[in-house]
Length: 145
Ligand SMILES: Cc1cc2nc3c(=O)[nH]c(=O)nc-3n(C[C@H](O)[C@H](O)[C@H](O)COP(=O)(O)O)c2cc1C
Image 1 (cartoon, rainbow, N blue to C red):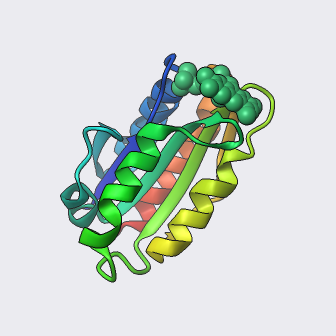
Image 2: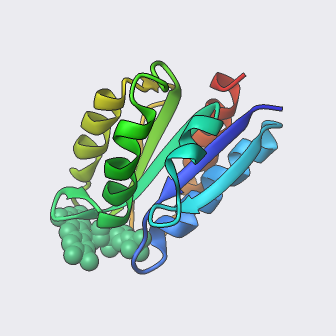
């Protein structure tokens, strides 16, 4: 069974809820999912995954520190070992959402391959946003096979 890593950071719970919706979409597509806060995730989690979802709140138009911490720690230990691994990104924000650019830029440095368009959500995900996040998870699961 293919495995998807969902790594995220969240200060007040919005992005954590988004990560859970992504994870549900992965499961519903028949893949295994591992959900980790960026500060707990290890480079080996990325190596072990067939695909990865990267999620963050928008912090001054950049990704939050928890996800950046993971990506910084994971870069050298995974370098040239994750080329073309499917990824997708999601962001919760307060009305901006430009943090998505920072995630996609670093995904490029890792040479990950975009498997789905990013999902941006204002505040706590509900309604269509939850549907979109689940679809992101399902697309990643499909790309992981
Ligand atoms: C320090 C800080 C900086 C923020 N900067 C932005 C920003 O530049 N643009 C934006 O749209 N929202 C910004 N926000 C709002 C958060 O991105 C938004 O409330 C998000 O949903 C919080 O997610 P969380 O509950 O997972 O922490 C900021 C919030 C904090 C705490």
